[in-house]
Each structure stands twice: as structure tokens, then as C-alpha cells.
Image 1 (tube, protein in one colour):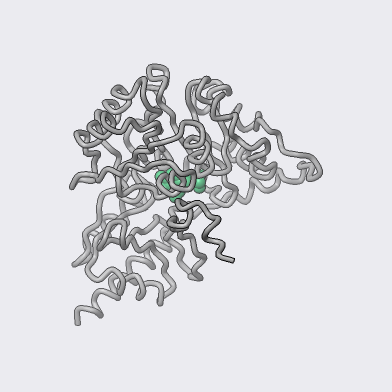
Image 2: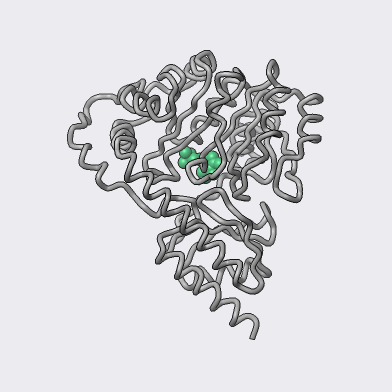
Length: 349
Ligand code: PMP
């Protein structure tokens, strides 16, 4: 029996998201926080494992509502923001437009659902090519537009004026999702203040980059009508009790969370200047918790780093000639920089 005959062609030609567990001592490949939140686990004792989780995640939404100055009705919880990307495309359909390179799940999920994808290359500065995007909007009328700002994997924020222009020119046409997964590390203003003015704007956030990647907690903030529609496709108990409880604890501990973020930002700047000092490396400035850098012979450098048990992300096929390193603890960053220097000095001699 040829199983492929029964599988939708869009799935047959789809490449699965690559997320392999590669054993290493210094793990700097997945844009996670180097700091966990073990204190949050103390609250798990009160969980009733025989009961379904709160389908509305009320306690969590109350804290998000306090922190972001929005009503609980403007929030929708997801099992990571990945799940919310699924829900958004399921709700609004395609075409789905996004710049490239960007977070790969927008394209993977669009294709999985069978929707058309429109990828518009970024310009040389890794900013949005506004002219081409506006042309594509006019011609192809996308239903959902994803803009990750700060962008993964380039690390920069897109020009706010360009994002605004896209939101304004799609008012009665598309939903514009500003994916602010890395906003906690950015010096630039996010798009939250604009929600009240633009009904087609959706802000997407995650707790994955600030210590809870293992628990899968993401959320949308948008107009109540959008939230109600997307909520129709949400699985009833999508956010489990453990994740809801620990996420709520994390948000209660705002001070500890903020100090981890501050430390990551200051380490990012040290990592950047460390990379700038290495001959043969061109790092790109970053507003996120990772740095993209150009290096000759990326495959060899990647493999040699891994041989020394330092894992980064090889961006081959996404931004050719580049590796991406996540900001780790001061010790991890020091090991990474020293190992990289050592590797490059060997390959020169
Ligand atoms: N958006 C962007 C831009 C990301 O880089 C990532 C994670 N790599 C996500 C969303 C997904 O985050 P989550 O863990 O919440 O699914």
C-alpha cells in the first residue's frame, strides 16, 4: 500500500521543523533563556491531576491583563505561540504573507493547513521591503501577515513606520500579527499601544524566551472580536494545569524575571563586542536574546564548535554563511567565545 497516495500533496512536500536533541555541554542553539524558574514548581503541589485545567486560564489572564494593561477578554492563551499561529491561520485562512528569512513556523503551518504562502525577501539591512510587500498585498490579498519584530533569525526590529504602513493599508483586508516573542530584550517600543487604534492588529507573545520554554505558554492580545473568533478553533484544554500554574507564578515574580532579562541584555552586548573583536567574524547587532553572525566556512566552524560540546544554530539555507548563537550565562558565553577564537586560529594556521 502506498500511504503517500492518501496524504494531502501539501503535506507530502512539507519539510518538518527541525528540532533535534543534540547532546552538548553549552546549549546555545534554540533562543531559550539560560535561567529556569525552579521556584515556580513549588506551586504544583496544589494541582488536582484528576481535573481538567481551567479552560479559560483565568488566573494567568488576570496577570497578563495587569502587566499589559489590557482586559482579559483581549487575551487568548496558547500551548506556545506555535499553537496560536496554527489557530490564526485556521481562523483567517490564506494567503499568508511574511518576510524571509523569518521564523519558519509561519510557512510550515500555512502549508500544513493547505494555505498559500507569500514570502517577501528582506532588504540588505534585514528590514522590510515595503514596496514589494504593499504590491503583494494589493495583488494577492493575504488574510494573515506575520511580522516577527525583533525578527528571528536576524535579531533586528523592523522599521516601526513600515509596520504601521502595512497595518494601515490592510485595515479591511488582513490581520497583521506582530510577533513580539523577543520584545522583552528590545530597546524599541512594542506595538501594544497601537491596539486601540487598529482593529486588524494582533500582538503575539511567549514565555518561552524568558524561562518557560519547557512549559509551552504563549498568548495573543487583540480586539475582543478577533479573540472570540480565534477562540472558536482553540482546543478546549489547550494549556495544561502545570503550565498555567507555573506561568502564573512567573508573572507574580516580576522582579526576578526582569533581572534575568536585564542580565541577558547586558550579556548580549558583551557577546556582541566579543564577536566583533574576532577576525573573520561579522556579527549583526541584535534586539533579541541571540546574535546572528557571518563566518567563513560555516559548516566546519559549526561542527568544530559541536566537537567541543558548544551547540549553536547553523543557518544554512536560511541565511547562508551565518550561525546564530543564543545568549547564555556569562560562563557559557565565555566558553563559546574562547572556543570560537581557538577554532578560527587553528583553521588559519
Ligand atoms: N515566534 C518566534 C519569532 C520565535 O522565534 C519562536 C520560537 N523560536 C516562536 C514564535 C515560538 O515560540 P513558542 O515557544 O511560544 O511556541
